[in-house]
Image (tube, rainbow, N blue to C red; front, side, top):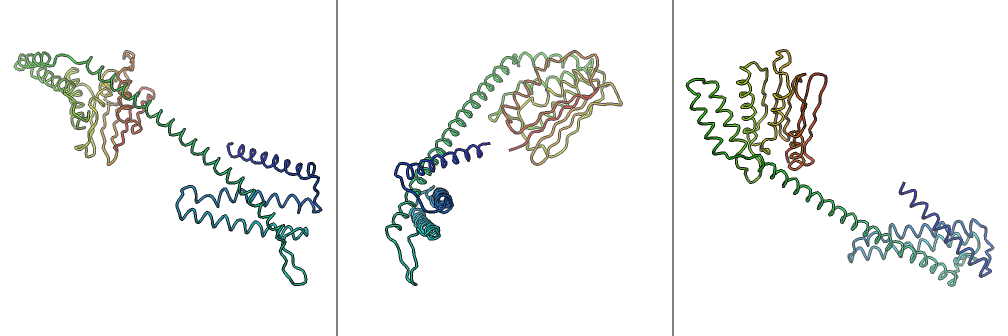
Length: 355
């Protein structure tokens, strides 16, 4: 863990520092203390270490955002911590008879030399603590800058990916376009020719014409259409396939909720509906296919259910891959698509959250 590694570094650093000071004082300078190990070394170093972290984590904390008031507060805290430090060290020293405050014959005696020596010792550790505070602050700032740079690079990469996806989708859209005038003129001709002889077939041509007109319509500025128009085309596809199979298919379409103001990208739901007629067994009265479009205050829920036709040809998944790609482009982080096949049944659940 990171905190455990940091704690280990601090402990090793203090061990090295204490070893240096003890070695320098006792071996090189030849100075010896008459105090016990507890009063001469352990307690003083614990107080010094406490002063170090108190200064770095409390007294200098107001300087994280420098103002005149914060600077004054930090100055007061530094004076207070020095006073408390000197008082505590004097109490420890008095136990070892080395403190700068003595009471003899009811008179308070202050050894100025020892006082200034102890004060200097406190300033000495405060200086180290201040250097540590600046180094830590610089490290944290550098780390934040690096994180922001990485985030910026990630956002740029995501933006580039989205732009590439948009370009690919636009190219795919252009590749699927045909001359609409020729198409609709031909469909109108077929409708007029068949109207008197076969009303059902002519109506099927009219429905097909409506579907094709919807597919080839010019995109609006926000790249979206009213949900109602997509629902109308779902009903058209169902109607067209009922004509194909002489109204023998068992398919229901259910629409719930207020969807008048909802807008979605076009041709988003239709590929799932088309797959029902491609791969579904729609002749089983006991297991009819269902198409449900439900709108609540903050989301769109689209579901399809159908029995799988055993003799259906395998799917290449291109249509669903394109739908997922468009969802990831236009509804990134706001959609959930689940495709589930259990036994002979196939269930599609698409949930899109509104902004």
